[in-house]
Structure formats: structure tokens, C-alpha cells
Length: 456
Image 1: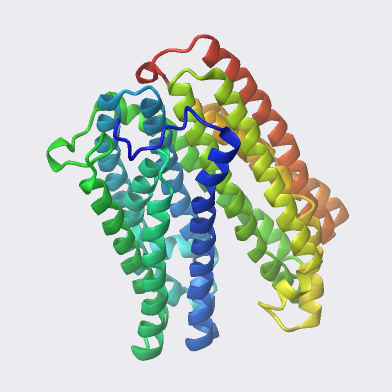
Image 2: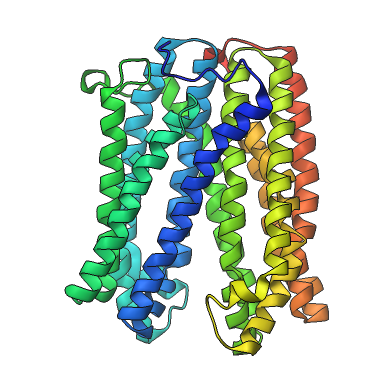
């Protein structure tokens, strides 16, 4: 293997996982900030109607992008396993197959989003005065879906072989361009909703071009070569069996969140606005924690491929400790400075007070999601995705809907609604951890070459 690749099967794990995760943390936080800038520009310079139109598309955008992120997770795991096994031929085959699979997924989702944008918005009961703007935003935004799919593909390949700095660099460039284009299209060209969507799509193609360009320039097993791009049936099946369950999991989470939002909407406008303001903390905390989940899957994938039993176990425990710890620290800061944080989004004292109700409960809950998500990432590193998907759908999605129609219906308080998060995370986390431990023992006791690893 080329020396520019990072072997995650040797060296001090605590330091390696931490340094591996830092660029991922920066990348994830930048994405959150860039998304906030989109909302800030359209809200400040295009008016409340444009802001409402863009905001009403959030669930659908999350639904589609979450599926692509899950699919790229399968790419990450499979490349990491073959790289850990020092199987250059399988790495090349996986990279070129994954390129085609990702491109096809992006094109299919783009077509579906463009064709069914209005129908999906009507299904979500988008307000009549906002639906035209929301439809226009989605149709333009979905034009960038193939680019997003291929950026995620490239990001997954780089992460699988230990390089998390290049995707961060390319994302930063694209993000800055996105902000500048937002300002240009909205303020200068007066394009409001269409301007924000066009800026997003253009920046996605820029990040894709930078990432794919870097892969084409490589001289190792991860290099893209036009002459080698073809589908391998066995590799395609593995990628889909790893990626589709993860993508469906993200999609079903988005659907479950609709029930939670409907429950929040049963309160007065002040509580709804406070919940919306406080919910901005979710993305910040989750995305920082997610960096350690990516590290967990990459480290476990490589070490499983290399047959390094002890490093698989330690990678799981260290990643869990980091994600739990960083969430605990961020939660404490959010609770202590919650009013200052909420004042970034509203100046009304009543709304801030309502938002604090969510921040306090969620601040005591965020860290416990590490047990669930880190265990899922660890199972994916072993090539297991179907069972973790079933567990998380049952424990976090179905359980939450049942909670809303039983516990929340009985008590009818906002506190009883927010408590569903920590209870669902605790139950699902315990089940996911137990499944990973069982899979770890079975997989590592009867370990086979990475190329022969089958998904359940």
C-alpha cells in the first residue's frame, strides 16, 4: 500500500482516534454553520415567506441526504476492511464499484425529488402560502443530489484509509463559496429561494469536483481510473447490504421525528418557537459526536480486516468514551449558557424560557445517545447492518411513537415529551451494545479474510 495511506491497525489508539476525529469534527461543525448561514441570509434579506419556504423543506432534505450518508457508510466499512486486510485488488474493485453505485443513487434520488417534490410537500401538509417557494427550492436543490452522493463517496474512501483532512479542506472551500453565492444570488440578483437553492447545488458540485479530482490524482489502490470503472456484482451486493439498511434507518428516523414535531405543535406558539430555537443545539452536539462514530467504524473495519481482535474491542471502547465525554462537556456548556445560546435565534424572553425547558432536559440526555450510535457504528465496522437497523427502528422509532400516544398523551406536558429521548436512547443503546458484543465474539472467534466477510 502507498505510504500516503494511514494504517489504523498499528499505533496508540487513543491518540490515533482523537487525531483522526478532529478534522471530522471540524467538517461536521462547518456543515452546520454553513446551513445556518443559508437560513440567516434568506431570512434577513429575502423575508419571512422565503425563510418559511426553505424551512419547510428540512424534513425532506434530511430524508434524502440521510439515505446517501448511510450508503456512503457502507463504502467506508468495505474499503476499510479490505485495506486492513492488505488486499489492494479488493480495495480497487470496491472503490470503482462504489463510484457507480453512488452516482446511480444520486441520479435516482434527484429524479424522484424533482418529480415528486410537490406531492411530498403536500403529504407533509406544507402551508399553502409556502408550498410554491418550497417546491422551487427542492427542485433546484435536488439537482445537486448526484454531486452530494459522489462527495459522500469520496469522503467515505478517504476516511476508510485514515485521511480525514482532505475532505475537510474541500468542504471548507465549497462552504465559503456557498456563503458568497448565497449573498450574491439573494442580495444582488434578488433570487431569494431560488438563489439559496442554486448556491447549495453549485457548492455541492464544487466539493464533488475537488474530491473526485483528488481520487483521480492518487497513485495507490484508492485511485479512480476511468478504464477501471465497472460494476462487480459481488461487491455491489455487499455495498447495498451495508449501505441500504443504514440509509433506511436515517429515513425512518426522519419520519419518526414528524410525530415528535406534531406533538410539539400541540402546544402554544411560544413553546413551538422555543423548541425550534433550542433544537439548533441538536445538530451541533450530534455532529461532533458523529465524528467519533465515523472513527469507530473506520478503525474497527481496518482492524477487523487485519484480524486484530484486541484493537477492535479497544477502538469501540475508546470511541464510546470520547463521544460520551464530548457530549457531556458540550451539554454542560449549553445548559450553563443556554439563554445566551437561545438569544442568537430570538430576543423574546418567553421564547427563551420555553427553549430552556428543552435545553435542560436534552443537556442531561445527549451523552447517552453515544451508547446507541457508537454501538451501531461498531457493528457496521464488522459488516453488520441489518440487525442494528431493526433494533434502532424498534427502540428509537417505534418506541418513540408509542411513547407519544401513551406517556405523553397521559401527562400532556412538554417535559413528558422530551423525556422520550433519554429513555429511547437508553433502551436502544443497551440492545445495540449487547448485539455488538455478541457479533464481536462470533466474528473474531471465526475470523475469515476480509474479502470473504458476508453481511448478515
